[in-house]
Length: 283
Image (tube, helix red, strand yellow):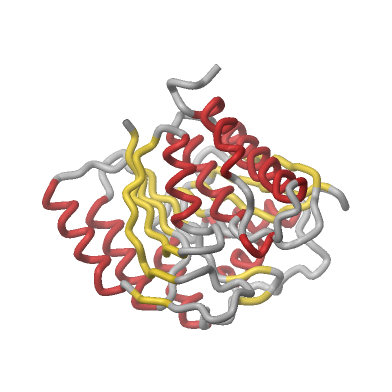
C-alpha cells in the first residue's frame, strides 16, 4: 500500500485541508498519515467565531517518532501553514522523512484573486519559498505563483501563454514539476497547466467554468492529483483526472443547492474516484 504524510490543518466544519485530503487519498487506496498543523472549529473563509489551537510545536515530534520507527513514505504533502515558524518545521520534516523515491508535493496556500489571505503576512510568503525549493511537485494558483515570483497579478486573467511563462519561472525556484491552477482557456473554460522542468513537457486540462467561490476545491484538486501521480499516471492524465473530478464535485454542489461556503460536496463522488484510481476497483 502506498503511504503519504499530509501536513495540513484540521477544521471541524467546512470541508477543507485534512477533512478532504484524508478521504480522497483513502479512496485511491493510499494510506494517509496526518500531521495536523492546527485544529480549528471551522474553516476561516467567511464563517465567524472560529476557535483555533496552533500545533507548530508538535510537528517536529511527529517527524522524530516516524523517523525513529523507520516508516517509509511514498509522498510528503504540505498545504496551508499559519506562521513562518511552521514553514521551518515543515522543511525540517521533509528532510527528516524524505526517502530516495519519496515525492514531495507543496501546495503553497497563501491567497487568491490577487490578494494574500488575511492571516498570511509578506514574511510568510517569503518563507514559503524555502519550502517550495524542497518540492518535487509545486502546485500554486495564479495568485500564489505571482507572490512567489514577485510579479504583478494579471487582472485580465491567466491564459496558456502566461501560464507557460509562470511555470518555467517557478521551476527555477527548485521544483522538478509545477502545476498551476486557475488557468483559463477562453471565457468559459478554466483548469490547470503543468510543466515538467526535467523533460520540458507542457500539458493542460480544462472544464466548464462555474460562477462562485467553492471552498476546498484547491485541496480537492491537489489531493486527486497526488493520488493519480502515486498510482503511476503520467502528468497529463493526472492533470485530467484532477480537473475532471474537481469539476464533478462542483457540479454536485450546485445541483444539491449546497451553500459553497460550507465546502464542496465531494463525498457522493468518491465512488467515481475509486473506480478511476483504486487498484482493486478500477474497471
